[in-house]
Length: 116
Image 1 (cartoon, rainbow, N blue to C red):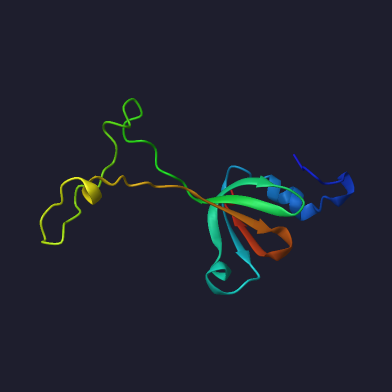
Image 2: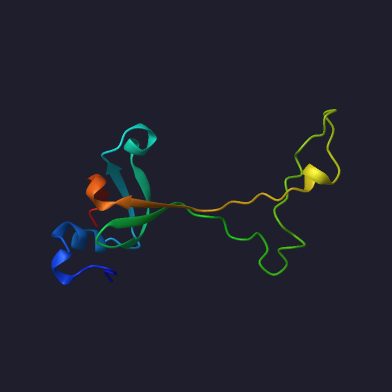
């Protein structure tokens, strides 16, 4: 479970974090700006130096059997004249990808999780 760690290098806090892998957690860091507001997501992995969370999961395909035929296209785009465009931008696919955050353990100020 702990890659690149000696058995003596595992802190009690790191062991505690491991109990919540797969759960939704909020981690506040000692940094400022937007990152100081905390990161909420699913805890993916923990090692001696970092925790990894998914803060925004990507969406599932709308039609997994024929994604290239029935994909999620944005048909609401307009051309320069206020009319619906044909082809080009009107057929751009909406991609929704996930966001992964690697947070240094020594920069965690608070770790929040459900009580149950």
